[in-house]
Amino acid sequence: MPWIAVARVEQLENGRVVVRVEGEKTPVLILKVGEELFAISDICTHDKNPLSDGPIEGHSIKCTRHGARFDLRTGKATLPAPRPVKAYRAKEEGGQIWLELP
Image (cartoon, rainbow, N blue to C red; front, side, top):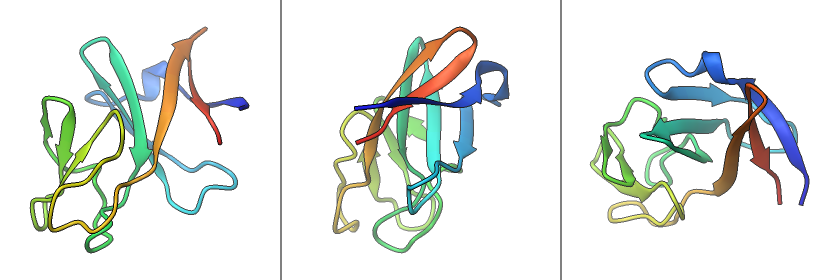
């Protein structure tokens, strides 16, 4: 699977940045939680609300509209979201944030 550079580390504002990735239908939300880097699709599968404004609780992010939660490691959803979001492997290297594309 190819790795692509999608942002510079200094673009992380409050540990978050949303990027557009060629070939992906939805924007990708990149989050730095502690020393861990996560990347998921920035859209709630319940009502299409952006997840980027949601609070982080442990290893999950909460949709601000109806409270659905998504695991940052796997994309797994809780109700009322019907489906998981896409999760990507992410890494920080050479001042860049890299995503592994499927």
